[in-house]
Image 1 (cartoon, rainbow, N blue to C red):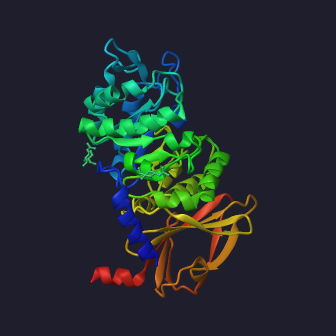
Image 2 (cartoon, protein in one colour):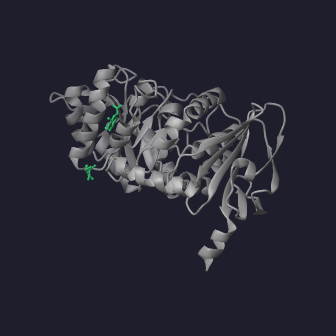
Length: 411
Ligand SMILES: *[C@@H]1O[C@H](CO)[C@@H](O)[C@H](O)[C@H]1NC(C)=O
Ligand SMILES: *[C@@H]1O[C@H](CO)[C@@H](O)[C@H](O)[C@H]1NC(C)=O
């Protein structure tokens, strides 16, 4: 049954997908916004202001600390890079903070095996008040980004009407396509229309965007993570089916490495975002990250799960006693990811269950690898009772795969 659903979703995805061949798995990389915001004070804070120097530093870290080789290849600029428009109406970066220009930064990224993302806004102004892309500027701006050899565009939606956005986002998709350069397209459009049908048409989004922000901006707190998670779960019947290879829901950046999450909460965000087949955009200071946070973000098994080629978004499958939730994401080779999540705030909770109770009924023998501890549980059958110990506001995450399958693939 699961496999049939998976195949069906893949077929549907092929029909609807934006046809630029990009982001067949969720994008991974680094995005400036959550951590560095609109800090333009380079005189007093030169190491942290939005400047080409900051992006070059992060590019170096992505390469030297092993991120790139794990798949974190996007180096993405957010708001506050724009200086204005020149006499011909062409966008130019802030001359003081980006003295060598965006093409230079793109070349630098490419020379390191990275990709460069940029930011604009469908509207009169960007959210922080820099020149936006009005309808008459869409084609010119797409051409400018392509000439600079940019690889991704995040198009925000401040300072525009719903009508302007309804015209502007498809127009930008067409303009990007017309440049001939494959540029991944991240649309903030649905977040400005409440994120739900009928105001949002997810079939249309999947045809024009590679990813889209559905809901509010993330802030550096556990409350913010929970509010986003709750919204995605509440609307999972709508959101889960619209994600797939080339077109993803985006619950926003990872906070891991910043100031608002405990270690358990950081592990939980990484696990839950992976269940959601979310983009893995870090937004943290890669120069000062702790080994603990690095271990979470660089966990090879969790990255493999996030990047599963079927690209099926997972769902919450159980909620028990108002504080225990179980999430499941189907993966290729009949494997699954399971996340056991506790909202308790007192002590580790012993959760007892069986695969049968979680609706597994395939009469197979499984092995479960705990993604964070590396522990392996062997010989799990549908009816086998098991106990997982879940820390407060924490997770246990399993990579679950049938043994039979493993034996076959090894022959
Ligand atoms: C433009 O769209 C066509 C048709 O969907 C597609 O085949 C092509 O790869 C696209 N090109 C780019 C650069 O996105
Ligand atoms: C949503 O968009 C799709 C694809 O463009 C279109 O076929 C469909 O009619 C739209 N649905 C509604 C309700 O507008």
